[in-house]
Picture 1 (tube, rainbow, N blue to C red):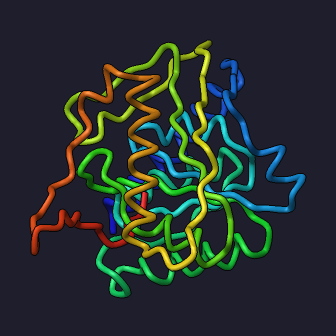
Picture 2 (picture 1 turned 180 degrees about the vertical axis):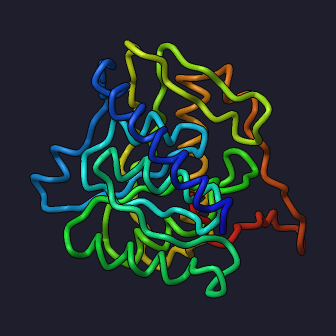
Length: 239
């Protein structure tokens, strides 16, 4: 309990810093599909990497709905998101026991109400760049476009000792957001197949626009069964 309280207060301090920091930065959006989606009345949800969640929270629209774990780390992230004007939804890995299913259902409901969602698709513990199934399920249940996006600060500190190589934008950075083509689940397509399509596009974006960090993507294990390559897709995870 004391760890969670300390983490929450630390999160408020970080959130205050991020609030000030975001005002010093410049933002550029490349291949931005949002205006066209809005004109067609189609909602959207971002699929991004855990490493880029701080820059992403600074660059995205306010009132974004984001899944946050119930761990001590989540106690830090929760107030950071609130300071940025976003809406945390608490849940984690481990299915219903840790609130993952409930949190995803809350996000689905809010997207249907017109909110925009974001999921750090390889969080909270990796492997780096491997997408869990929550974002695909959200896209299927809401009809919203899934937009893979990488967010890259021109000046940053990279936490090289962490599994995700978490990035901290520095003051007066230019933050570039590169969007992929909006993605929808095909008729009769499985969640697993849609998840892998999102993963490939997200990894393509990082390899194209941030190749030095893309070198740390973890290849997905490929299994051979009856002569057909099958790839494991993990359960939804929270940021």
